[in-house]
Length: 168
Image (tube, rainbow, N blue to C red):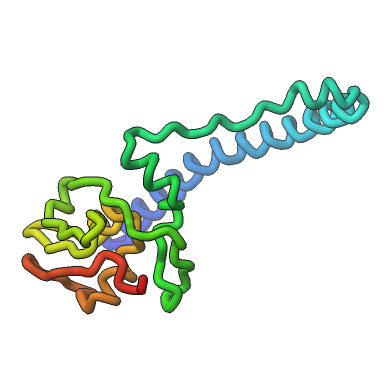
């Protein structure tokens, strides 16, 4: 057998051995899952036979998350979790405007220009800013923000973005 064949055979043995080593824990977890399923049927039967009061007592509600700061609480109050994507890009804009300014972050250090009511209207891009961080700062879908402001796929320092470009 020549050297190339020996190397190929050795590599194949190592690969197969590695796959077997990876498969052993997976097979063990499948066995445990099958055993747990059988126990789950017994527990389900016991639960079905329990009184409604006993069943209700075993259900624990999920904890309500706590905002980390007042800016996050304000963002949550207006539905910041949906980020107000532009309808043309598959989103539903948040009805409550203007967008909150959650404050500067490492990659959203630009200058904010306020409207007459003191709400964020424009954002001037600073060196090192990223679209995603700007979007997070104002609770807005960053792709929609950049596309609507003609700043996608690249934006440059000094460029001015309208924060709510699709809000009349």
